[in-house]
Length: 66
Image (cartoon, one colour):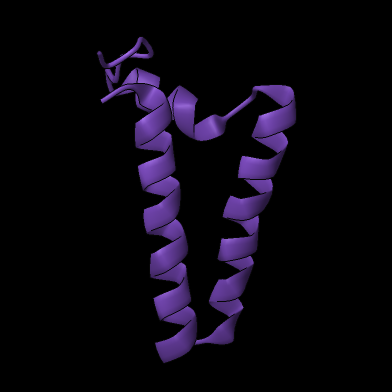
């Protein structure tokens, strides 16, 4: 899997987890959902993605998976 797909998977996992936490624990977890969404939105325009930087440090390759 390349880094783009991992970023999408991690972001999706964060969003689903925060929605579950907002439903069962506190609605304040929706702020985390908004934070993840805002980062995805800004990275579409700027190309800067903090999660991609973290994943590169863990050794995830940025090339095409095929």
